[in-house]
Length: 200
View 1 (spheres, rainbow, N blue to C red):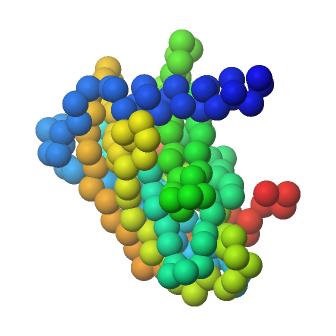
View 2 (view 1 turned 180 degrees about the horizontal axis):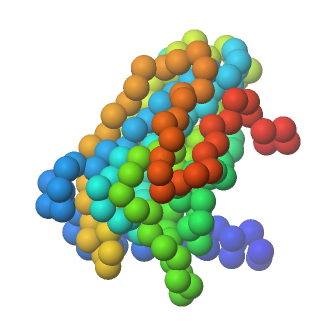
């Protein structure tokens, strides 16, 4: 019974994000906001994916569904961290993996009945996803892209009070070490993990 309730709670934020306003292809508030995806190798069978955001207006909710693949090597997003990222203070933070389609959906909402400030204009990491091989094979490169996941989650940013924006997507070439983050005036604390946390 508890597992069913937890599953329902994990789906509610996705439905909220999917139903917030009609998203626009053009950002009418200024420059096009962007989600930046940077895959990097941790070791032979484990990779990380840094997900960053560049925005020029306040953001109160984020939906980032990603798919990843490497030939016939089955991959899984076995953990995701938000600590040290720009959405760390958000009330709703989760990543829902789907091993059958090799994808993960990140859902972030600032406020659910409690006042939480939006993410201000700026740039920086919002999450880091850790991916491993289900087949215990070496991961020699990895293809990453955005996708659409049930119940209709797509790449989306939401500005106050509920204006949807479809951001641009930049996927950087895979690296051999974690991407370095630039210092952000509005965020004094930053964190880019160098290795996969123990126990995940």
